[in-house]
Length: 536
Image (cartoon, rainbow, N blue to C red; front, side, top):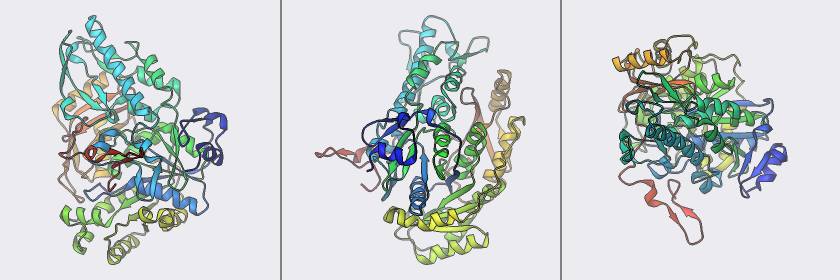
């Protein structure tokens, strides 16, 4: 790997703003941020499937391919969470020859950002219970602030605390679902961070008045805990392409994008900034535009949608265990899911490139069928083999991106902020999901009334939905139409600055699978960690 100081110098970062975290990691001070000079490229995907799409791998691949073509490119990604790393997914640093390095460090404790966010979250929880102990602050029956842990642990979804009094039921959320994590992804500077933390609503008084972190005196200490975590992390790809890795909200339960300060930093130093949005375009993609871009004054010039032959077959009705088998009928039927996302990109006024992440068992005839379909839509397609070949395998993708004109810079948000919340929810569901309407349960209607009474107006919406389907039912693949989406609960994230609408059975604390990925992780006698990535 390139020494981190040399990588920073090559990128043009002022030496005094780069704080080495060992030989191959560094923090970058926010003072290094300067006016944007580069084009922002968003990488998103079809709805994920059991076969895996490799969105992070393709983001890294594109940046490496652009560098091979002589471009000054940076990839700007989220930090991996220990939950999926030790759960079902494995490491979050790409795959094969298209990885972030040092992968083991990034996948585990990295520079401590997620631990700092967890600690800040739990400090607030401790101060809430301390206020209850001294009979101050919120009504114990109306506390909404739970604790957080960066781990999948279903046993902590519901717990009893306060055996020293007062006793109450609460639970844990995974740190990626914490409002502190969402705030970390959207803050502009330290003053904005503290102001957002102070606005967090932890509960209500008996009279129904909101109680905030600021009223409990927690915001200053929480900001202090996040001092280092405010700074983006500089690492590199396996081929030495600069990578900024910062922030980690999940897209099914939060807004699914890397931090705003990281993306703005990257745009000041690179010709091309490749960033991603979590899960499919219906979740992370929509939230990237309607939340992150709106908050930060950004707008990309191009969208790259990741697809695979396997994913198309799955959404076309093929059995998950037979995705490697020839099935042209299912392949063609699966175009409907990809087309729905391409329609969403077009509605935003942006050009799209589809990258086909090639798996070893993909047939040339299958790739030709996909290319022909996309050509009929006037969309460029590129096959990427960077998993096996590194940047050389991403040259077709890089060329497709470089030959695609930048779209208009005028934002096309899904809704105006002054629209009602039902109008906002329907706008997203119809444009990005293909739904007929959003149905609010009586409980959700009551939640919205309370939110508006407490001043939560003119905010964007963050829909918590399964990533596996365009609907709110994970068992429905493809691209159904004319279906309802039911919102069962609505929460105000006053610090993050959005309203969260929960659909289906979304859980904010995942559980481990029967055989978790953690079972294969080992520390070798040579000090190397093995088993973090799928296939290790």
